[in-house]
Amino acid sequence: MRRWDEGAWRARQRAHRERVSRWTGPHRERRQRGEAHPILDFLFTYYSHRPTRLERWHPGPEVLLTGDAEEFLRWPGYRRAGDGVCFDPATLPAPRRATGEFVHRLLSATANRPARLGCFGLHEWAMVYRDDRPRHEQLPLRLGAAGTDAVVESMPLRCTHHDAFRFFTAAAVPRNETAPTRAGQPDTEQPGCLHATMDLYKWAYKLAPATPSELVADCFELAVAVRELDMRASPYDLTELGYSAVPIETPAGRAEYARQQAEFARRAEPLRARLIELAERVATGRAAALI
Image (cartoon, rainbow, N blue to C red; front, side):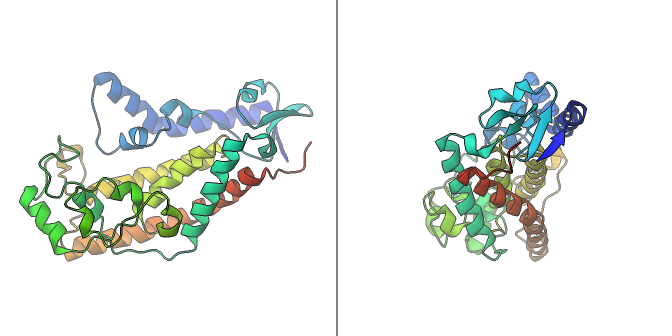
């Protein structure tokens, strides 16, 4: 059990808030102006973790906060220990334990599979295939509707992620080589999937307050980078937003997509491993030696 005096943990608290304010601040400003950002807002709308929660700092297990740390006792899992406050997984309520069990099972299964790099981001194209009303109506299609449909029809759809597949248009659904389901997610998730990598952020905050906030921020930063590739490889023209296309309709574009996809899978690996260990602690209530 590490012991942090108030000066030390307050400094970490401030550093975390400053780190994530790079994204939470502009998001709030856009909302005040009534503006939307089709790439970055996704991290605050599709994912349910509000900016205030992302800015909130938690130390994670095996840390004793001394000084005036009473504020942490409002969150589940915290308790007094000696002359301080600590997070103790053994005190978490049953629903949090169940979340830990699911996250451990899902991420462990994902980590044990090889990365598949042949989808080329076509899930975004399948979401507008033969549809008169694209999901991002404010963004033009780079190749137009007919050109977009032609790309979908020229390559196989190999999406393995339920939360991408469920937004396919009705015409695109039967073109996918499988039909991923929510119940079957632990059986189909694989580490090459961009959405599986982005979802590490979701699983990090779902395990909160057990998750050290630095780990949440690491997962969020990776999700931002992945989201950018996700949309740059999409059928939308993002030129006015300052993003260049990764044209997966070309061999060079597909090669670039697969290269970045593999790099993101590599960066995700240590984060996934840390979440697996943390989820096991949440599920079992395993804690360090108590003070």
